[in-house]
Image 1: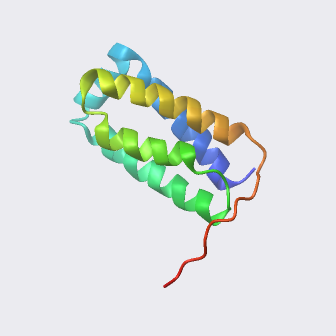
Image 2: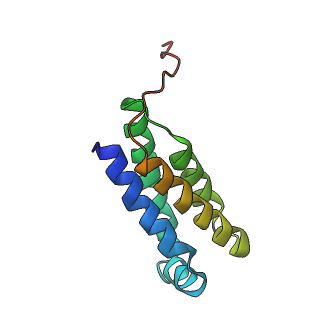
Image 3: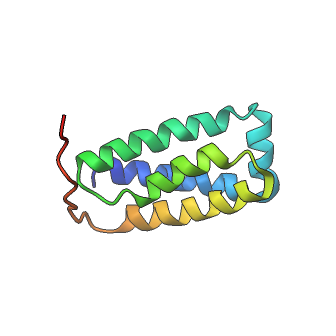
Length: 105
């Protein structure tokens, strides 16, 4: 199992915890919204590793979007739940190599 798949599972579990209505809200507000910043960094690292391993990136992209918009009360709950599901689905799939366009720097 690659590091990106392990991080998808870890971030999926974290997102699932944040999706629990009262518990997730208490965690986010209790940390002064820094939990969302931590999740943004975790999703960015997972995204970079997934790109490097040519794996699916939809869960990590959705997680980054969630981290940026989760401060909105009910929208945040739905985004956390969707992100958790997508991350766990992409983390459970066998590694299927995707071919992204090469960097043109």
